[in-house]
Image (cartoon, rainbow, N blue to C red; front, side, top):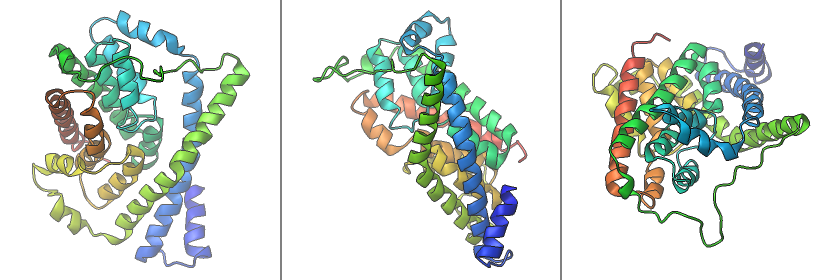
Length: 319
């Protein structure tokens, strides 16, 4: 139905030629934008409702009681249901450190949070299919758990340079806001859904718009030339190219999808997307005030290696 509506707008109302570049781009933009908007409102609201049943004051106790790896899995799973970019995850990362949670567990959260959330899951499912969406979400969680375990085992607690504790205003991470009544939970879910939608609708439109331009105007040969499709180094090159760029996964997923339509292997496109979302320069600048350069380099190196490995694995998965 959405595809028919998009085609009607593009070809009947705007009187565009379906075979033209602009016709294909406009149809791509209308279809994917409407579809993503619709899915975000539903899925984000559902996830928000589920989160109301997780008392935040018990999160620390849950993490600290977990056996080997379970705390990392819990933190990574929490990151997967929180719609934060790499930079907005940092305050919660600091809050975990202030709560004296193990360093590896805190890193499991900050690694997974910008890579996987309900918005990204919806975007991946809507564009790549739900099989790819599930595999991507699983790989992001596994990356967070594995990298967190590695960092935790290295005993790098002394590399935290931020003086932890309350700031001059007495502020600290506050999560005790979840409603108790069923009506309150429904209201909270709706508010969260529309709040996130209002923050993301224009970002998504920009991302889909860029993807539409790539889809309609940029040839496959362009990406074959600059991303080295046929080279074994394509995945690490794509990951390195993405690091200087700062954007959330919700912005980059449409671009990654457009790249795959131009012949770029799925894993190469995902490596590019994940490095943009999870290893941005603004994030590094902010983290430099919290952890030492040594720990920052270990964090970036470990996550980059994981992203490259995920990219190679996804190159074997057919779209």
